[in-house]
Image 1: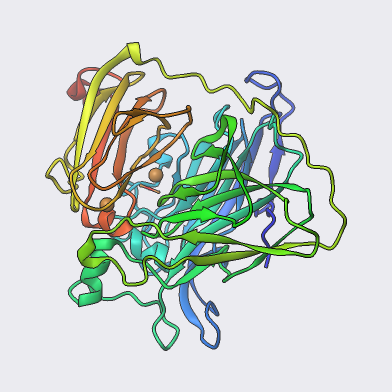
Image 2: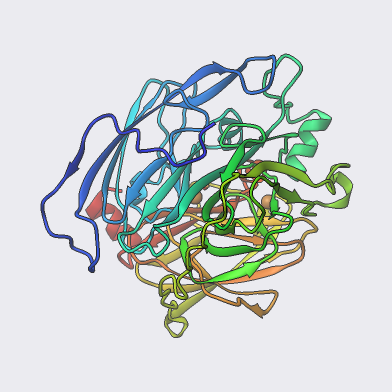
Length: 468
Ligand code: C2O
Ligand code: CU
Ligand code: CU
């Protein structure tokens, strides 16, 4: 079981250019990084005593962890050897529309696609990649297709800490070891469609209940990704305070001390674990009960605490704790005086503003470089984690309560009957960007819409001049 970070599974060439960096100092020399990813079916043993037919990237479950640096020019050579169309979506990255891997650019079985993008300065953080084909995202992720992305900054204030990656997912298996994916008309399928599909087996980096070792006194940096279709993790380590240091788009300005952290679907969390336990002792990372459900379909076991991994202290004598910088990095506030539009998104069960996804419709028509406020209102009695492609935003308030500190996010969980407001600037990259509920069953059902960011005011003129 390998919990430490892995290196980029680049096929070969990581070319280091000698050219000076375009970005502010300090920065890495700009590299061109090439990665090859192949999606293909494979049999693997995921639960004791059985083998399971799954889908993998490069034969691995989860897919290989991709590590980039700010400033990298990335080319991903993708090959689809699955029996069905797919895409790879780079969840949270700010990149060109044609590399977003949205349902607009399916890759058919047997075909290849090159995704090219530059890792923007200021975006160091934890991201992930997963398929995004029309109506089949939940199915393909349940089959095993997802992986982590780590983007590093040259001036990372926490780079001296030991780092652990924790990719959380859950799944359900039938008696023969196959993945339990009930038909949508069966009673289980109906409940999955309502709640989002949860599984009783929880995986941490593809393993059940692995161990992380820590030395007494040591401070570790954990990057957590919720890759579950619907399960929300309320994380705590009994006997330990956590330092919450980052979210979807990277580090906060300052660490925040907490007892627990809720990680909704597709969200990421960076936290510092301080080894305050005694040498030779043990603790565990827990998922505390979190009630995101409507009462009618809430699972009977929802209020059980689950253990996710063991935290094992080595027998070595304590080390002195590493100092945590008071300021991690500045996060400039998006300028709300520049706001040119306010968008209201009303969430009901399975729909946004009373409509299902239609890829021929544009739901939000916006200009490049505009700054806008989105208000997401949840009218129903279950949580919906709302995600916007392409652009990181800043949450302004939740139920009218101002957000206590700034952060970059691409998912905001909107609790039952709650409202969240965020500000976003469409800084670069015209194109069509999806926004949707990240409960995969809801997304696949059509709880999704399209933001079109345009460079020119006249869409028809653009179509004739640019042939799009
Ligand atoms: Cu992980 Cu459309 O998103
Ligand atoms: Cu996304
Ligand atoms: Cu939803």
